[in-house]
Image 1 (cartoon, rainbow, N blue to C red):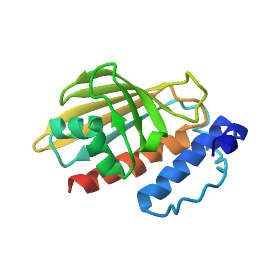
Image 2 (image 1 turned 90 degrees about the vertical axis):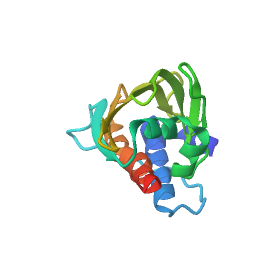
Image 3 (image 1 turned 60 degrees about the horizontal axis):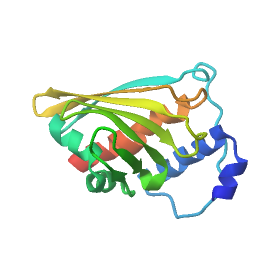
Image 4 (image 1 turned 120 degrees about the horizontal axis):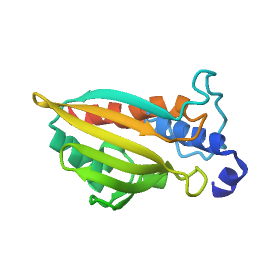
Length: 174
């Protein structure tokens, strides 16, 4: 797989990760290793390097915080291996090593800020992912701001958060 990824552009490789993770989420991946196909970003989103999402989760903020930073719980809701050091400065790999980074700021039950990257991006290229957790009765309003990702990646990252994080997490919490 590494030799195939090395021949692809960053956009093609990143799109391939999105496709594989999407198939894993819906249970359609049978383990076949096929080269990624490029998706053409919409003209309006081609230059976007940030996204903002707000999602309601059926659990308290402290529980959501714990799930996002615990290796076993993260793996349980995504169905893929995760290694997460839950301390400020701690490194993580998720989705079986496809995503990696470092936690920059952690405020228990309130905020997670991470330097975050798919391993298909060029070495040293990181984006910033910020999860703000706000209590709403017995639920959490999670506000995601993902900034600084490469141009052309918006059209798969934006729906990818729903497909690989929010939908499986809501199902896990049910």
